[in-house]
Image (cartoon, rainbow, N blue to C red):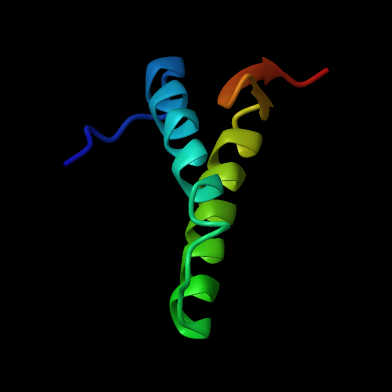
Length: 70
């Protein structure tokens, strides 16, 4: 469980950012349409959390790096 706070700490955002590379790894695997859609929704939710906290996640050498949005 998470400890609820007024602001999400950067460490939590970095951990969420690290999970994004696993979604990329499913691109060449067979998935049902329902599972593929739900996986895409999960990926978009994680990206939304990162972006709503003022960061963007970009890939570099197969890993996602967080950048502060201007």
